[in-house]
Length: 426
Image (cartoon, one colour):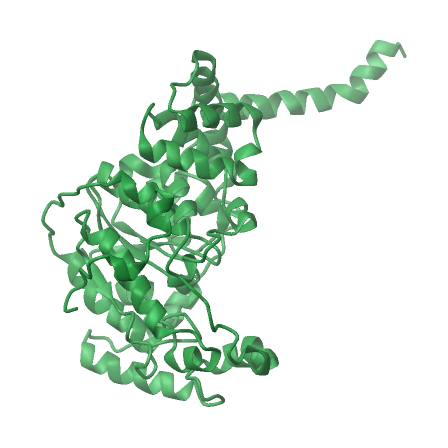
């Protein structure tokens, strides 16, 4: 057998397979048909694929799904979770959960870059965790976990020269390992940070690579999605057939009481046994000196506000509490939490973001928290009392006054006591 024929028999199939992959990824057509079953699964999956891609988010936001943006509290799917209540009582909206352990403002900003136009003029719900606002900001490895080049590609395509939002986002991205994961994108990010336009080559690269990333998204984003719909259905079975807030509050109280019997903190039994009991003695007074009043997260959060303003999005912000009994045990200061609340609400209200459900002082309410920092039972019902009318009723067109000074280190370091207290009822 001739050498050329032998080589073809060995390497020919590999070359054909490689060519097939290239054709699949760069074909000018669009594979972007998301099955409705996958959209429904994605809405409650909390999978990393959702943050990284565009297909499933866009398909959902084109329907009656509303982004619920937050972090690990969204995984606490008891019967009073927003997804359970909306499904059980056939609300005119369905939550699309965008939050998992380690997701913060910067993660959400870049994730939303892949779905800007589908959200224009719509509503979102944002749960602001005080724990995001530590001095060092988002953890580098957690940002990388939810990051994709598709997000940055979309960000760069929209970025304008001399735009404070784009310059700050580029600066933050370059401070993280993800910003150096692709040399060509990194060079473009550096130009955005400097406030200068992209080169023609960079723009061409973005157009070509967007096609690649979109095809990757279409081919792979619907794989390996966690399916939490069974948990949602199980929660529905627990609820009464007719919506009645008083009946639901009684039921939440009974369930909370029955599930917090093995500890003095009001923490769910299972969570206490698995996560707290083994280390509880070491955690006494361990949070004395913790501070959520300073750091880059305040400017990262401004990216979200700027994004909402540019897309005429109307958000409701929920500020949850910390379990009061646990805070007293660990030494976490309620005064510090109150000052955080004062600072973040000043940032919101001075820019026209006035839909705020402030629960920061509700951590002492029975069965309000499922564990140390996450909402549960009656806490979810308190969220629903605010969110349901906000989403079901038409809201006035917001008028925002975006202030670029919130991107500065001066604001990050600002002492909350030195700013006006603009909170309702304060």
